Image (cartoon, rainbow, N blue to C red):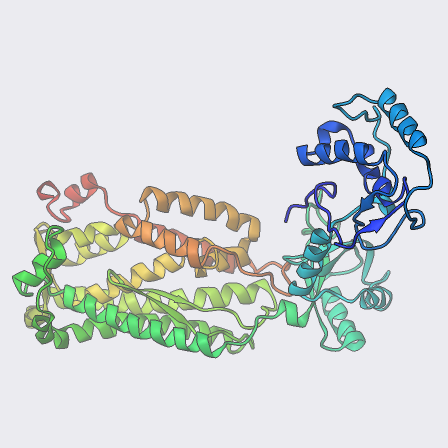
Length: 545
């Protein structure tokens, strides 16, 4: 919030007083006389001019700033003669121009005791203090510095605000041992001194100019209250919203199953959903016979999303990390965009962040690929010909990796056509793999963003995020789904994950390698086939589109 000049706002008390010349009115405008004319607004300049005229007369009526008299005693009407008043006015007119107030060329310094703050500013500061998070008790800061830090652990040199709103304290200084051992010792002593009142974070020192002499980045320790740093519990309204979104996701999965039978749907239904000039909706009862045949595909797509969430919970359980209820996001093209699952406890370290973040996409991708590959095998089996559905071959041009796998499995003859006969498991697996790839994009609070932040740090996530937003905006990744997915991330998932308790220790080489391979597979999955390569490989009839 920007602060306004104190000379522009006053809080007058509507109690008239008779003051002697040189009383509160002179004190009220003393600040203005110290400021050059260019620094005053036109209202203040006008008030100064009016004051210079009114102050020539005795017994002037004045409104005090805070309701107190301030300067001088209260006096009745003037005891001076009219001649003396006129003489004072004449002397002032000789020393000043009639239309412009004379100000000193140099602005004197104003001490903190002379600064005038309006009640508007003071009330704003108090309101922010009341509405903001509870800060660390200064007495506890002194106690923690005396009892926790020292020559054998961490020598504190200065302190800075810590947290999103500066509600915590960041201790900066010099580490006096192995960071993991020092951190464990500090956490144990903090619990002995203050109980469960605070959480201690080990983070990289901000704006550090060099590395720690023992290797790795320089560290500092942040202190926050538990009620401020830990996520709140899930409310009843959040359960209601999650249930409604899950019901909508079931509906979008069934709609996807019906849309996969587009070659057998009634012509009026197809025309309504494909022709932009169609205005009259068809009879929706015509779709009822197709619901039963759409359920297997809907079960497959929904099962992938549920398996994805189960992977997160299975990885979090042994590490004693609590997860919130998943909020599924319906989508008519893929059945679902996945789910938003929040951490309901502070993560202990970056390894935990990588493991839990990667577990969901890996579980969903493993099930999706199994369905996709089995569906391709059934598509080339004559015994399953009655279960096949006709889909446009353009579907296989939407992914470089999945298009190449389909081409290698089904062959040139089956793929080089306007329509391709495939098993519904192929569609379910394709949608599941695409959704898993979207959720593994290295941006914001997505699973991929959390994994990159845990494996390589927040600065690396910032660079990956810019690249991801650029590729989505240009339509390079995801094709026609890039725009809605980019908007979804910007609205719901753009913020990065909060730091772990130990946000410094490295995650190891194999975790970084796994995250890197996963990001490469994500790019290959979401990168569409360009026309020349699709024509050369025989994936679809490029010239017919």
